[in-house]
Length: 174
Image (cartoon, rainbow, N blue to C red; front, side, top):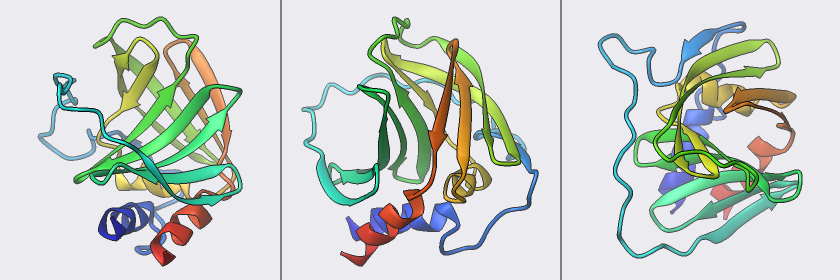
């Protein structure tokens, strides 16, 4: 578990340092020759139980033994999360008021302080959207503090990022 949390920490830049300011990058599409991410078939394996590893402010680090998520509850029952599954880090947004068609693709944008990112998101379910294969620059931006503005599936999300890095550090220190 510590290895997975450490992987999120490394990808965040808290270990590697920060990317260039004002960078623009596509999620998973920065690398030459790599196409847009495609949705995968849903797993029919038994659902895993998520456990809280650390909390800092409104941010929580959770794991199911395979994946690690840094998540924050927004406006009642909506959530934003960075999820590390193997080598992939996805930005996942969940809103119980969405009525999306699973597999639908969306263009999306994220602005974190002065850094802008855009890419493709996919509806994982009727209430959840994922930006898969986020670039290291985009992940690092989430740990810079400040505010993120995420526009996808007809909604604009404004998320305070303060405390995200501290939550991951606490998880690694356990």
